[in-house]
Amino acid sequence: MTEKEKMLSGKLYLASDEELIQMRQNARSILDVFNSTMFNETKKRRDLTYQLFGRVGENVKVNKPFYCDYGVNIFVGDNFYANYDCMIIDVGEVRIGDNVFFGPRVNIYTAGHPIDKDVRNTQLEYGKTVTIGNDVWIGGNVVINPGVTIGSNVVIGSGSVVVKDIESNVVAAGNPCKTVRKITQEDKKYWEQRQKEH
Image (cartoon, helix red, strand yellow):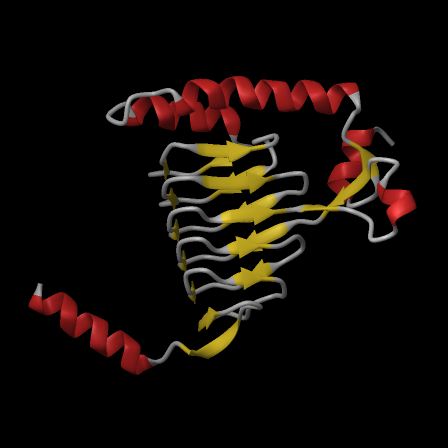
């Protein structure tokens, strides 16, 4: 297996591999242009997102600054929004569904490092996929750790550190992030009434 294949399969791999270095350099060249755009150049940033990501749905908006390692391992659905200062370390794949919104400074980490110091000091590392379902709001300054799956119709409270899977249809928050409560029909009625008052 190549180091890239090992990386994407969750095996230990060396990031110093020439193919991976070239992939990171390509992503950073795109990010240099992306992050130097004027704020009103939304179309240019959208076009650069199509060059950078592995998949981009309809109506996707990523604010600058944005950072990632490879870009090609990020797959986003329709109506995705990432606010300022988002960072996605996409050593493993990051799969994001439809209607997912990130507050500012959301960080997704797929990279892991061995706990054993001797193995870690060989520069070996690994990646674990992060998956986010549909209709998810992730508050500002949230950290999502490697291997986490977040279900659909979920709200993650600001400042949370998500270290374990989060089921669908819940509000979750904290460090470590845990389910606070289910999302109910009463929530739906309340917010539909607020919408009518708008």
